[in-house]
Image (tube, rainbow, N blue to C red):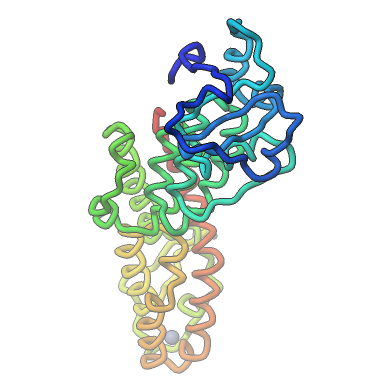
Amino acid sequence: MAAASTLKVQEASSSSSFQKPSKVAKAPFDDTHADVILRTSDNIDFRVFSVVLSLASPFFKTMFKLPQAEKEENPVIPMSEESAILRTVLLFCYPGAEPTFDNLDELKEVMEVMSKYDMGSVGQRVRIHLLNFLEKEPLRVFAIAACYKWEDGARKAALRLLNEPVLTLIGTQIKELEYIPAAVYQRLLDFHRRCGCAAANLTKEPRWMDATCIWFTCTVSACPKHDMPLTLSDGQAHWTRRWFMNYLDSARVALEERPTKATITNSALMLPHVIKANSECSSCRVSAALDLTSFAHGLFSQEIDRALSKVELDLKL
Ligand SMILES: [Zn+2]
């Protein structure tokens, strides 16, 4: 970051003769009572109150304390930023304003400017907007959050990235990865792998299940059984149906790749096994679809949440 003292404060009238005349920014930065003018690289003058800038930025606070050769009434501070970005940055400094962002590039640029001018508390408000891009660009959100050492935001992005297979993640090229250490990226991939193991293990250890669903209660002797009984939450061994075990096998493979609730509630995962149940047993046919849907959206989803919450993510940012 440039030192405050390196910024040259000059008079409005001292801009070079070959430069186009500056224009005044739109409200609220056209206030004639403001005591400082920030002139952007595209020659727009933002009239601002030094006290507002000082509250938002220790950088500007220090600069305004510096002695000036001649005390000017409305000093002009040349800025390297363009007006569109500076306007958003300044709006966040003013009470009541809450700008929104159409794209992540704009948000990232605003965060960079705020970091440059040491606007810590305002920057914390801005970074919340990163989460609006979690669905569309989770890896970029992760990298930006990591870059600004925002652990909570990076974790939210890491959880969202569980919807993507690791190989897809590795194949995704984004410029923000240039700015985070390889060790942080490796911890993200390792977190994904450990979540995959934790979620998949639920299908191998069924002690969290109860015996209320049709695949445990079916009494039709012709309905194909799994070759081993399962020990459930009541500590008792229960026979179950082969079609349900095949669903659990499919769920395990899918969870290793994408360890999320969306994986096991996907109807494409359930449907082949419901069809199998319908074709094999008159009793399972009645309840298989409803019971499996309830199980996936209910108990199975809760267990996935529980298992994932135990997987630690220490990015060491
Ligand atoms: Zn059956």
